[in-house]
Image: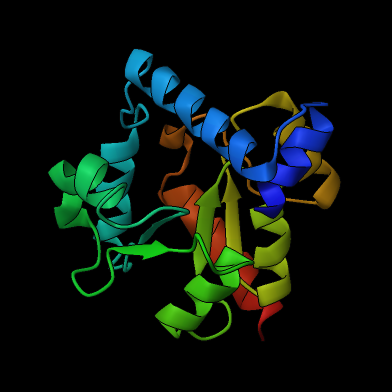
Length: 175
């Protein structure tokens, strides 16, 4: 409801929070119908590279597993952790803290790959690694200003060399 209220104010709409949310969801559904969700180029190869390292891979998002993972990631589900393939962080903020709690990993063992600088900032606070794959120039600039060390233009850049450099930097930070 807070998001709907903020959107209505920011866009100067004469609607209630719920009317704004309903309009947003209707527009989002129309957009999704015109632009179907698909895996990013290089995603399957990246999942395979990560799986080869022995990493447990968990996807996350703001919707239920059925709405996201089962719908869009089922064809590549073999790459994801069998016990925890997806975490719905829609009602848990910040979501990275919820993921950290659910995965119960130690400091320096959890790495996020995301397009948002906010995830980078919270990851740093939690002592987690982060690889940025910004979708916009603004997010790239924000990541650079935040001191994000590992920023990629495409998923193919997340290779063994980058993963080893990230692992080394995380070891130095936690020892």
